[in-house]
Length: 208
Image (cartoon, rainbow, N blue to C red; front, side, top):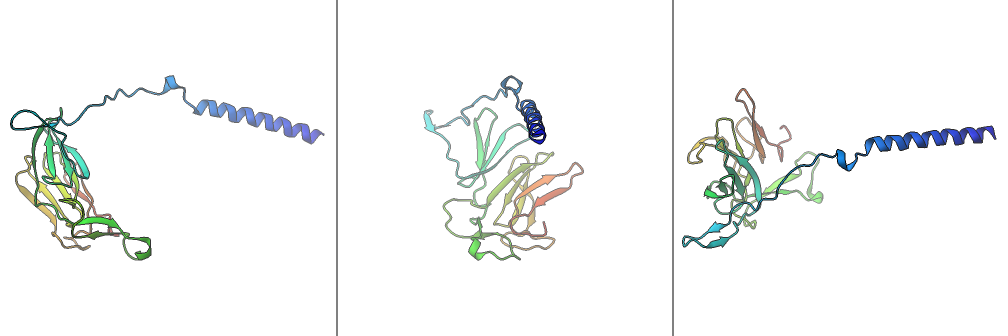
């Protein structure tokens, strides 16, 4: 009987303790900060040469976005003119990049075809339902230069802040490898404060 009463006391104390912990961890609605986000119909729809609205912009598989040092927005998509630039309010500025990106596409290797000593990702080349299918990432470094990553093209471009000239290429276009000057489905770039450049070569390079 004593053990029974003692068990009840322990169970009751434990229940009160857990209930108190739950009250402490569950935030009241008034404690949750309000994020004053506002939906914006962005970007501004296209306008014809005659001045009438021409409908929304066609983005094909948007891969990445970045902000230039001027505050404009770069949209990288897998369609014609893959790099599109807009003012912060959504006004179209310009587009470029046809012919820069490969038509390859990164795909996951089916489970039945996987090997423990190889990557689970590969590339397929040919009609893949998009143009500039290799477009994977766009970044802007502290100096304003624009970096574009072509994953299945195995190459990364560094362009001037206006996107007119290619200043540097990292990797060899169309050549996959894991040497000091080749990539194997690169994914992204980042910049250190001292000017070093980091390349994410993570799809098919086990050494990245």
